[in-house]
Image (tube, rainbow over all chains, first blue to last red; front, side, top):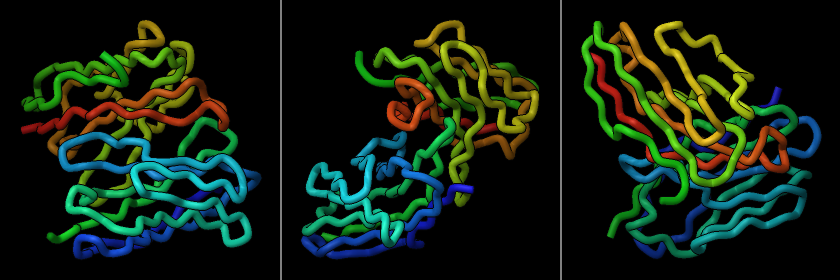
Length: 111
Length: 115
């Protein structure tokens, strides 16, 4: 079946550091891939998505590229801010109605 | 008001109480979902509705009873809950259930504490 694996956290960075959160997936066919972010006390917000191989999703300085050859969708940001502290979820949606979510990676950014 | 809203945002209830969670989406979507998010556990899909019809009940105990009167509203009726049901309950919606139109948009959640 479909699955998503993302790096365990927490990830702790200083402000302005480079961020990478790894995500790999297993799926048949060509799923759509997503990153969601959850700030403390809130629901999940869609951060970015990509629907086919080599697509790059981007939003708020974050970006991720759909790599079918490595079945990966790593999240990157060139310079993180304290306000980026949150939990980040990688997800995929293939055929069928279920979106498969990763376990989440907590990010702490220190001033 | 835009997006997906949920009320109440916080709820404390005893094990013998009956309460309901409400979700409303203003996105014109046709599919709605209930998820349970517990500490240190993956997000759990509970129920899925498409055009008001339930398409998934993910082995959820009968003390949770969903209701979808129309495509914009989704309720989760709660009765005789257990302390382990304490969690964040998230509602989401999507245009439909297809891969192409299935991007889910979430509400802020209801934080439930069962005493």
